[in-house]
Length: 63
Ligand SMILES: [Zn+2]
Image (cartoon, rainbow, N blue to C red; front, side, top):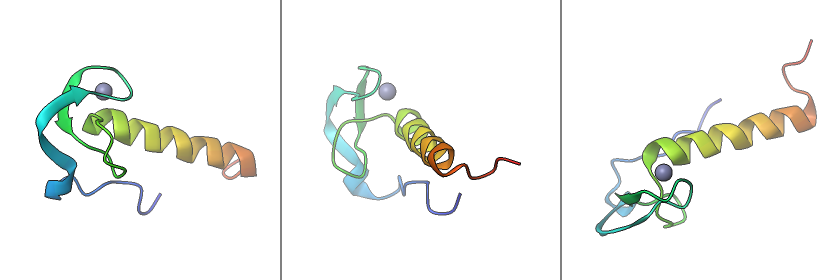
């Protein structure tokens, strides 16, 4: 799965203001690639889920 991980070292992924994570609701300083509040683990899980759904849709990886 190339290119699925976000670059969390980019300062655009961090804010002084804590906002509820869009996925789990916990306060977080982190922002996803669209600038929405999201934990690193939650955002990466969401990306993994999207990739899995895409794979299912195209039946990639099935024997
Ligand atoms: Zn979260």
